[in-house]
Amino acid sequence: MLIKRLTLFLVMSLFAACQFSENRYLTRLVKPEELIGSWQATEFAIKSLRDVGVRDHLSVQDHTLVLKADGSCSIRAILNMPVEGRIDYRIYRTDCRWRLRNIGHQTLELNLTPTPTSGSPYFYFAEEGGRLLLWQYATDPDAWRYMEYEKKNTNTTLEP
Image (tube, rainbow, N blue to C red; front, side, top):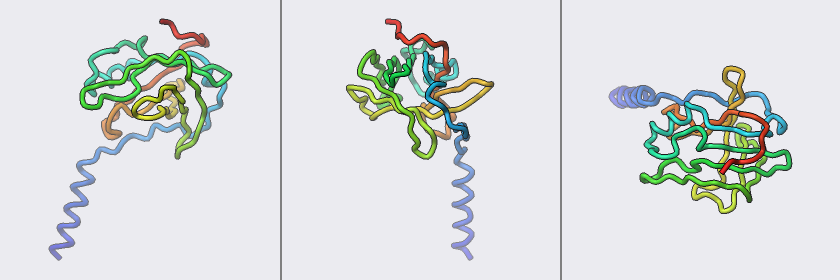
């Protein structure tokens, strides 16, 4: 009887400690033509970066992704969330390719050369307030902090 109570207590403690991440995955399939154009970080992305300890590159203009119809792309962004106090802020104007994949949820995968230390970055999709968003976790999923981008226009060049 003591073992059952102890087990029940441990299970209840685990559930109480875990906040559970929200489910913001888009259920419809995104078409490639919806993605063509310029994407920029949202204000929530910048807040999330601050919350996880980033101290530089805290402007939405510092985080830009351009997806072209031929599968090429350019990106300026933090590609790894802070690891041991360091961030990986990079600009790729060439050697960037994009494609849609499914890894349990539909994703936008970026193939970058040289590859970031965390591997090829990918983004999930969400729709909020009628806007399509690209997003990835900025930290522990239970923290509800995201690096997210919204589409700005159809310009296909990255400004220096």
